[in-house]
Image 1: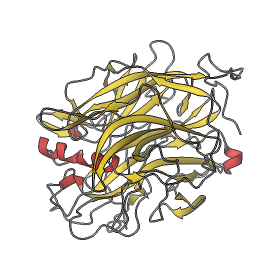
Image 2: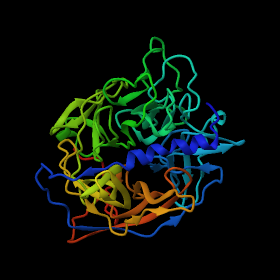
Image 3: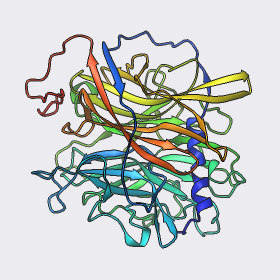
Amino acid sequence: MRQAAEPDATERLLRHVVAIVVLALSLAWAQPSRAAPDITFSLSSDEPLTYPASIHYLPDEHTTIVGARDPRLDLPTRGPPATYDFWVAMANEVGGARHGDAFVLQTSDFHNFRFAPGFGDAHHGGAVFWSPHPGSGNCSYPGVTHFDEQYAAPGSVLQDPTLPPGNLIMIYEAEIHCPAAPAGMAAGWVSIGVARSSDGGRTWPAPVSGPGLERDWLAYGDDRYAGVTLPGSPPAQGLDSFYGDSLPSAFIDDMDRVGSGGVYIYTPYQFTGSPGVRADARIHIARARLDTRPGALRQRLHFMKWYAGGWTQEGRGGLEEGVVPPCGAIYGEGGAQISYNDALRRYMMTFVCTTYRCPTANNCEPINLSLYYSTATSLAAQDWTRPQLIENSTRPYRTAPNGAKIIDGGYPSFVSPGCRPGHLGLTGMVFLLDGDPLGERRFVVRSFTIRPGRPIAMDGAGSSNGCSTAGAHG
């Protein structure tokens, strides 16, 4: 792994502005209006977090939060204090060099963090997963340029429910920035990668091509490959913009096996444009079916994109279409997370909505960043309601003394402690970026509260938070 100097690391973060700060004029939503649940969804103020001083650029993608695992059995630990693992995208500085991309942090109080014991490669600064040639200043390597050549960071890390405990799926952002271009890592080709681990995430496939795949730019093998990407392949010359399917998270639907016809992993992401096609500032979704046949071996996931009212487009190269109704008049959507809210008995998508002021058609600037939510009764049907504002989530864009734009609310990652992974209750926390999306930032947390407008029927086996402790439905 190339040891990136600080300018390279700062340059790398330009992709988030390109991915989040995209514009679209809101058009009439063609789908029928759907009734949203009668709730008030609100947040507290920011609370600071404590973590090792060697950590930089935390968070750099969506954060996955799960109960910590016993290293021998990979089962939830029992007895106090309960601990949680945070799968994060960030950089760690060791010996003056900054290393990325995927790390595991651990906490027992959700405010003080350490590096999770038993995870990380010392030769890569404690990372568990990384790209082969990070940055954009070293493009002289031989061989094919892979889909994740310059950046590879999660997304989401989830247990595959069709396989024994410890079999994890990582959905990650994968970027190409070679041949080098003047914009550095603010221009390039981005895809959504898939990786597998069979030992609870302690080891993942290295970026080394398997036999016969030396020239396949989309795969190293069956355990590390591109699942969602644009049509065609990156051009031979440096790109002048940022193209692709980016900033993914993931949710495995454990609530609707019958209606969906199987167990599916759903991946919301942003489409940042392609050569000749402008970004649409909307949340997009792809899904892949997990193999539930008895004794089946794990296979590559075959993603399909939602388009024209169905799962009609190939994940690799298909057409693109947004799924959530617009969140404003002049807006940009991003940073989406799908959960199932046990108390509301609905799927819930939370995401960032950036609003803009446009004095002229070609002169727009971001004004505010807010968090919104939408709900659905079926992920197979994608019947999302019109987005609603999460109260006390709106924060203005600020300008630092050095001219940098500062945001408070990037990469919102919601969790209800005590709920099953991927499930929320009526209360919990959301972990966020507060700072410069082009450089240093803070990892902060807010509490969330959902107040139903009328009494709701709690699951008899559930907790006071509304989290079901029963098995999955359907």
